[in-house]
Length: 170
Image (cartoon, rainbow, N blue to C red; front, side, top):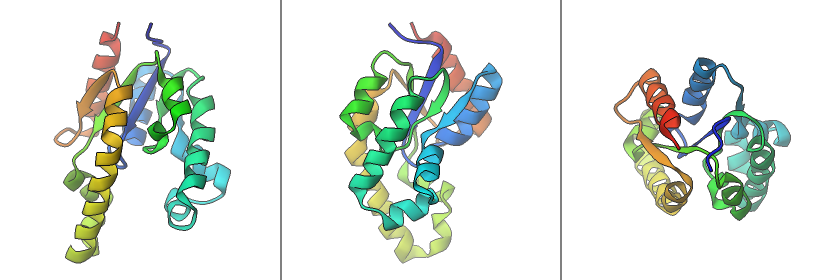
């Protein structure tokens, strides 16, 4: 049984979860929660600062702590990209309408502004992001009811597709 009072967006960094999620929530007249914003607030650091300075296990625990209560609330939820790695989060996602916003590595690095970092740094970052996506892709596929490819779409077009597929869920 799918719960239609909620809509969860998952995907890689720069897939558009926050931007699209806010627009979808506005269009549906419902609340919006971004677990990355909650993690940053809980840690007292920006997300880039947290990733640069804290151990991965601590960040994973913070993602889980932010995700579980958010998933119990109605509205549109933008789930941090790493949250799907936690068993507890995947369990909480069962029965919820989950849309995987897919983004390619080249598009993600463009959206993150990494193209300006120079060829060598961009190459390293793309390889790291590619490895991250390969590690998480099976989790996104496992929890998502549907996928929306975002590479060649505007934010408004992605939001339209998300709402369309959400309304089509059983």
